[in-house]
Amino acid sequence: MPHSGRPILSSMDRFQLVVEAIEDYAIYMLDPYGLIESWSPGAERLKGYRADEVLGKSYSMFFRPQDVAEGLPEWQLSRARLRGKSEEEGWRVRKDGSVFWANIIVSRILDEDGTLLGYAKITRDITERRRLRELERSLKRMDEFIAMIGHELRNPLGPIRYASTFIQERGGFDAKQRIAWGIHDRQLALLTRLLDELLDVGRVTSGKLRISPARIPFKQVLDQAIETFSSEAEHRERDLQVLLPEGEIWVNADELRITQVLQNLLSNALKFTLPGGHIEVRAEVCEERLRVEVKDDGLGMDPVTVDDLFLLFAQGQAQRETHQPGLGIGLALSRMIVEMHGGVISGTSPGRGQGSVFRFELPGAEFKAF
Image (cartoon, rainbow, N blue to C red; front, top):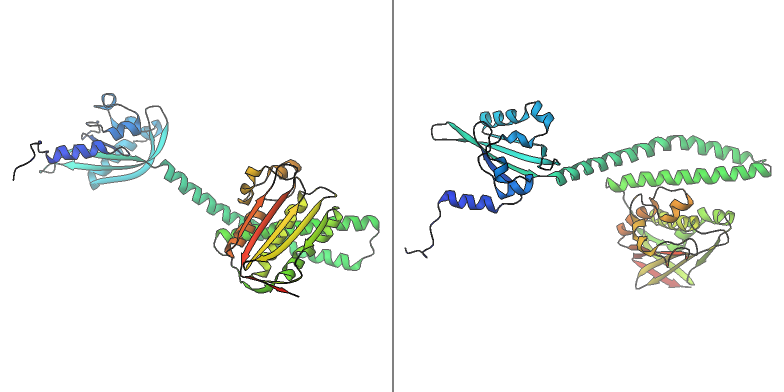
């Protein structure tokens, strides 16, 4: 069959073309003693050396000094010679002295008589993969630590709460003792809420957080959330106003978890509203979706940073500046809960000193007028 007139490439020529086209791998040959016999464009890109700088030199030049001192280059070739192939991961050195985490494959090459001709070596940079593996392990350890510390700190809270209730029931406080008791009671409630959030984060990240939606009256959920903060709002001289339509709002939701979302939003508004400020809670049903809004005229924030507040352990500038208590969990947890319900949550602010608005929507809502 006639051909186009172009020269016919041998198998070796085609192989060489393939090697030269591969840029993400360092592919080169070694003689039986570990001296470099060939050098690919990918090897130059990865290691930074030109061919004339490495040919004829020992491939141990790519190892760290401590690895050379321990005999790692010789061991690698010895294993490939005995087993046919050696594969490992380890640190390798570039021309500029920087190191990278590499995956290395060394294969022996034999002639027809079984005589060792040398080795084929393939190296690739997997530093990013190693970093991601380490990150995954760190996150797993962090999840385990959060769960452990949450449970360990939760254990003494039971006796403390029992003793506090016993003291409160005995009564007989004078004016100073009532003030001290109020401080104690509020701080105990804060500590309990922080630990509950820590435990919930552990449940979320491990996939153990569950919701049990049911048809519930929204006002019942709202009343439970407000009950926790009404006395605190009064103590801090903040005006709390609730605006609901004349009727009953029903929603398909997990009562405990949506109460938790409302508590987090109210707590957030309370922390960043100055004495004499106002907090407003508004709810309505639109197109079978419950829409809830918590608005304050407090410290506000930079509009471009609002979305970052929904990240786990993130704290806004206002919280850092005012040294408000909190672990940066509440809003992140609220987003997780709302999204598990098939809803959305968001926040807005005109700017620093101009207040904030946080909203969430849940599907499966119904309004019945009185």
